[in-house]
Length: 173
Picture 1 (cartoon, rainbow, N blue to C red):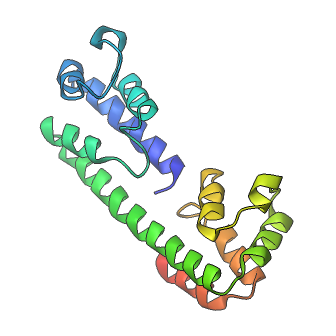
Picture 2: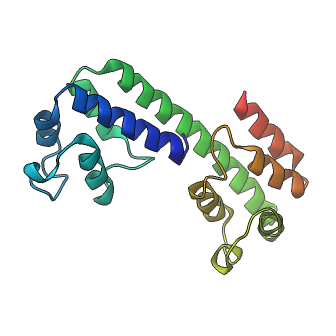
Picture 3: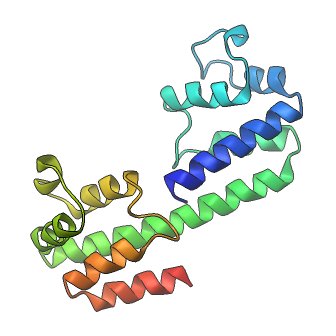
């Protein structure tokens, strides 16, 4: 669900596809989605990197993985991707609920103050106008990740939003 988990899954899938010798098959399936010639893509990891560069694969855009894994009959990894997608969706819904609640209660500046005290925010982050955008930046830094929600709970506690801390705790269960 986090960027670390996404990258781990990307590596695991690429390794498995390479082991299955499905290179030509997956390159053909991705025809039109990559700019490189097939002979310039030596392995599945290189293919996935190019798909990412062309915005055809990303942490919230993994449908292509499901299609590839179905095509080669790799059902265990297919299930891992489905689980990742489901958990990621729940996680994003949680962050969206928290973002809305903080936006509605005009607590953005208070949130930025607490974040600045806990983590160095540059001028750009301190000038963020929407909680969701700040959360997205913190997630990219790895501060909001499944299994690492203590930072989120800490900043919510810092702005005295125990109701939202409880939502995070419920999510962790």
